[in-house]
Length: 119
Image 1 (cartoon, rainbow, N blue to C red):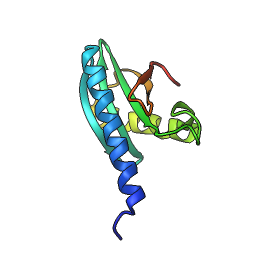
Image 2 (cartoon, rainbow, N blue to C red; image 1 turned 90 degrees about the horizontal axis):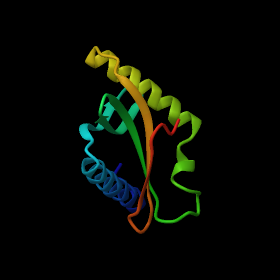
Image 3 (cartoon, helix red, strand yellow; image 1 turned 135 degrees about the vertical axis):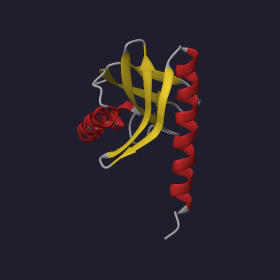
Image 4 (cartoon, one colour; image 1 turned 30 degrees about the vertical axis):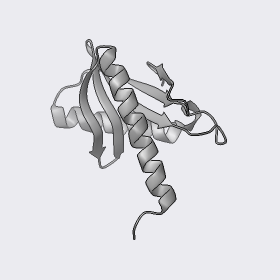
């Protein structure tokens, strides 16, 4: 079944936000390790290296605040999914880096708020 126009729009919005955050992080000196890293537990938007830490980054992009802020959309369930994604990543890479979980909010005007150690 093909995606609805709304689904297509949401995916395009999300991809735009991910690209903006990727460029933002590159400017800060982060190294992009993985984009849209898929696992049996879900997908991590970005996995980046920041010095001696690996950050698993959830990117949340919004066109409006009718459903709350982007950060509020990172529910405990999504946080737990990211923990499992990180464990899967470590199992596959056979290393357990100094890791953290970050959240990037992308607002309707393109502004980015970035939260290190978000959870």
